[in-house]
Length: 381
Image (tube, rainbow, N blue to C red):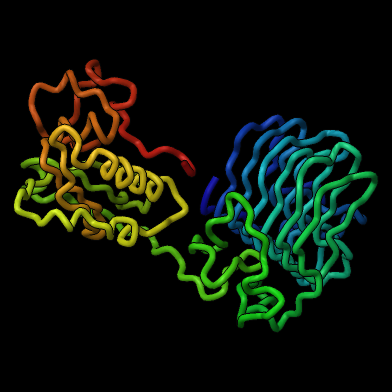
């Protein structure tokens, strides 16, 4: 679930038993880049509302990252009571509560949640709740909480246990761009925060999808100070006639709706391109976006370089021609598909453009499972 808004526009919910995303027995879900606002008790007793994001009742391996949670009674929860959670990661989230309304509770709660990794979250409370993160009950073991930036405690409760390190718990509002709106990006290079985080496997970007580290080391919290956010998706224009016919190559872009979807254009080959343009610049020219197509393109670049020079295959040029990424090779598209993309093309009788959604595709009964869909792999490699 990605890039959604969950909000009670009245400023509070209609009753206390409400929530944002609430899942039981869920496996391998990803909750990324969403905004949650005002999921809070309207005044029905002293029970906090359910979490903005809650996975419990034997849910497993949930990834919750890059979400903004503002004025919700509870932020992110893995497990509840004896109905626990296994594995999973909570990272690069910003959680803010103004203290106005609702029944303010914890920012991140682990309850009988084993082997969970919680790192580089920023939590700032103006409510009087004492704990930003709670590690609760004996079933919560084997995980860790690191690189948290907050003004509240990272607390063990009721027999819970997890490794805790490199957490800053004395944050001030002036450290942030605009705490009162939930904008918890760093406003300046706070000495106790910038370049002070521990390296964690999986810590490669920040709340905005910008690369980490931006300086000598990683920054504590969800925002990497001085980082450059990944560019916004750009709509893909229709291919030109020249792109619909010709030799070997590949381009990948995004759909007009802003959804990343690989599509292939076979571009005329240029055998006179100097070999040194095989672009050493490939990695530099590819925005390191935290989405499937970014990973997809980097895989193509890596595989192309691996095959370069083998059995007559040469990558003549790899360039970014926004919003496309174009590979020009010394061999035709059939060879490119088989060697680089890993698609089986024995059913193709001639080298023609493969353009998903344009009618110029393999007949359905001829498609292999991988060739028929030609979609980017989900998530990171």
